[in-house]
Image (cartoon, rainbow, N blue to C red):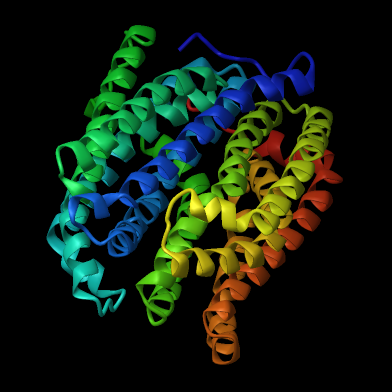
Length: 460
């Protein structure tokens, strides 16, 4: 692993953009795929399926990748951060050790998750208490395919985390773009031409993920011929412990977020499939904000991780400032788009007037929280890069738990709008708290130096 993009020297903004741009483009490509997937699923009425029920079914099954991502993040964030620290400290042996053990964790998590979903798929659907049988029937054809082959997604993220820690996000972009492009091409072919409906959407996804994994593996072997993947003799309990120490808080945060989202989805279903469909489409459109924020969060994590390992605290402060100057105006632009162009955005994906109306109300309410969501992403990137992921995770957990009493309270008077407002208030709370914590920690980075020097241990 000799190819490292060093973020501890040179022009800060240029280096940040060089790391962030591939992540950003990857996020945009992923967003384009998700939107394209929803677009083609919304056209299944042409092959005799109920488009609203199909969108609701795919949206419901879509909580499964969210659930999986919580486990993926445990190894992904821990591996990326620890490799970043090792790069900053010039400990090349540690890079190989963390890469090997991070991939091994993803293999174990992915295999376990896929098996459990195949066994308990109907129990998973029962959580939502769906009353419309057609939605259940559609979901049960989609879920086993997506869930049974989820292991590919785990391993793909294992490889991306290695490249992120090395600052080589451009390789992730190139490889993931191939898989996403293939997925986009296969969607209309499998869904409409072959008339496989939502099963076709699932097959297109897992096939593209498998090809992406093969490309990642070949690329990894070519660049790291001396690193043996998944060999028991290469496992290092200390490395695994360090990865889990950083990754577990982030994973727990993600898992609780998904659990709370499923809880809220049960209330959304009480207002019918049209409202659920509108919310699922609206959340995909909302990726204009949170997908981009997540992409920059990754870049911030890599940048902070390397510079923290090199103990260059001034670069960290400047980097956070520069990124904020970009993301805050962007979030304001997205908020304006969601509020003033909500009808046009919904009409891209569906022509059902009831779904469009409900989607417009969702987008206009949630638009108010966009800037706070972006500020939360900046703060999370900082704390993850410092190896203090428990701070951003604790903030997210508290903020997300706040949604439960808010939903129970607001739904009594505002119906489904109370659910949208609970999401809004929660995002505003999380963004406000984390940006205040960010300002505080940035003023105390130098005081973390002594503790870091004393406690830092090498894997050698």
